[in-house]
Length: 263
Image 1 (cartoon, rainbow, N blue to C red):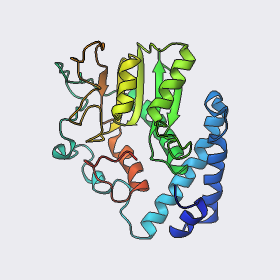
Image 2: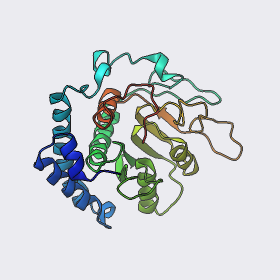
Image 3: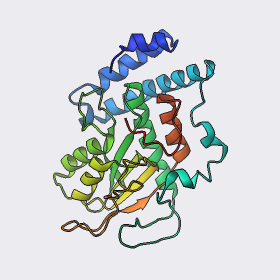
Image 4: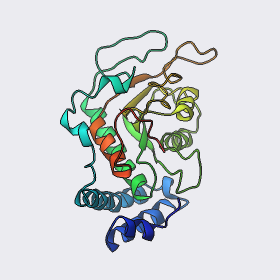
């Protein structure tokens, strides 16, 4: 990661409290039994949220773009040109290589807020703020947050961690009937995992053009004509998109919709 937590805090004029919170998050999330204990996952959220808020305030105080930037000006109408062919949750539409569009519900918002809480943990740990969870029969059975840098593992994407934990919870590689909720459009790697485990629905916060499994030139998440693969999952996109983008802005003040910001 380059700089230490202390060096990062000094460079961004962050208080000692932020360092303490970051270290608390890393200690909790670094435990080998972290993903098996709900009490640890619940315990890590408050310090992660506080650390995120402190960083947010520091950026504003130093005159850097506020999280969300121009996105906050028109949250209901994001720039369609920058989103390419990214599907949004409106009337149903199906076809080869197309995502089936579904209507937004309060449940989608509730799941996404939980995923955003996980993304804040990733941000507090120095990783890209992405959070994911898997729902089965109306119950959250697995969670994951980005841990590429924390675990020094290129495959440590939030979606993959959540999917692994879901397979472990159900003792099966077949996640048919399950829903994946994630703050960022799954990349190629995560999209492959979704298709191979037969997840039935994917709820997405923000797009990741160029590297996304829907909005890129290689829509493997929604392509129905791949030989040997089953039907693609239903897609609900744009859920709390402005809030998901605002988190990325905290990690990268130069972020705008349309950039392939994942790492």
